[in-house]
Length: 318
Image 1: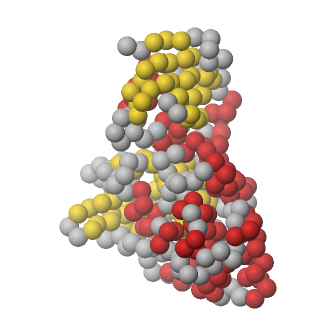
Image 2: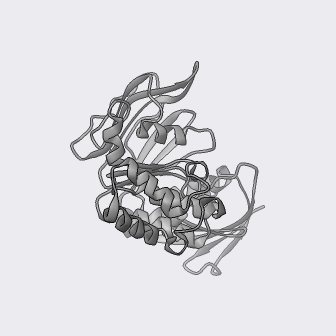
C-alpha cells in the first residue's frame, strides 16, 4: 500500500478531481456547533473503486459518508460526487448516489418489504412494470425474495440491513454509500454484501462503506480510508499484492476493551474463529511487526503459529 492523500495538518493539499473521479473532496470541514468533527480533509476516489472506511467509533466515518451524500454541508471546502455537488444539486444527486444509513429507522414499519421499496422507487419516478422488475431483481440480489410481503417490523436486524442495501441500489446509482453494512449479519448476509460489492465493481460502479470487519469483502476492496480524530489517510491497495509471496500466521488471544481488527484486516487477509486470528502475511514482514499491529488493535496475544501449515511452528509469547 502507498499513502496517497493527506492527514490533518495545518495546511492541506487540495486533490484535483480527474474526469474518472467518483468522489472528490477538497479541504472540506464539517462542524457541529463550535466543534470541528471532520477536516480539513481532501480525498479523490476513482470511478469503479470499492472503498472501505475504517476507524474507531466516533472517529468521523459516518460523517464522511454523510458529507458525500449531501446530508451534512461543509462549512468550508467542496464536495463532488459523480461530478455533482451534493449540497446544491440534491435532486440530481439522488439519481446518481444511493445510500443506506440506519436502515432499522429508515423504513415504514407497518409496510411490507416490497411496499417500502416501491415507495422509495416512487421518489425517483420509477413506477409500473419497470419498478416491479427492479424490485424483484433487487430482492433476489440481497436474498430476500421469499419475504417480500413480510412487514418490515417483523424482520430481524440483519434482514433490515439487507433491505437497506436493496434500497441503496434503486436506479443503479453510480455511487453507493453504506454505513456499517456488515454489522449484525450472519455468514449468509455477509456473503450477500460481498457479492453485491463485487458485482458493482465489475460493472464499474463505486461503493463506499464503513466497517469494523473488512475480512469478508477484503478481496473486493481497492481503497482504504482511515479516519481518526476528524482527519483521514487514503491508501490504495496495489493489484501487485496478490503476487507477493506470503506465509500464514495464526494468533491466539483474548480481546481487550475496544478491540478493533479492521485496521489489521485492511493490511492482511484476516479471518477469525473464536480466540484465533488467521493472517496471510508477506514473507518480508517481520513477526514483531505483525504482533505489534495485532496488540495495537486490542488483542492480548497468548500464542503464535507460523508456517505454510499452521502446525509447523509454534512460538509462545510470555
